[in-house]
Length: 112
View 1 (cartoon, rainbow, N blue to C red):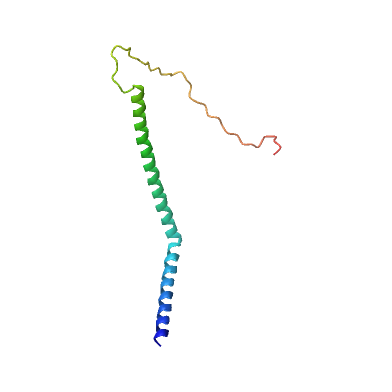
View 2 (cartoon, rainbow, N blue to C red):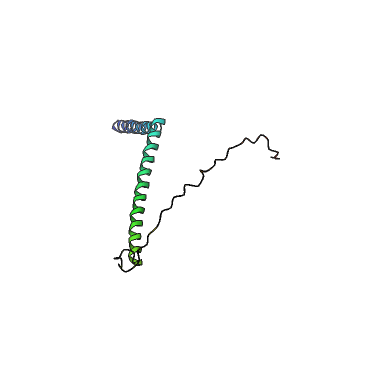
């Protein structure tokens, strides 16, 4: 008698456990929850991409500083060297760009 009660209880518990697992999985697969999960993954991917871009920017600045040191661009300027001066010239005579009008293809003789 005890053996039957044990197996009945074990079967009932396994049934309740399996039903609970299936119901949880079904709730996760509703369209609303799938949309929320997709949005969360997109936000996480955006954060990872931002972190990657910041790391690249930091490493790029470090590498530029190393190259500047190696080429002597960050050292003190020799006062005896001539100073470069650049003139800024504005071109007001250039006409504005022309935009090409698009025409429909109804008058074309093409074989396709």
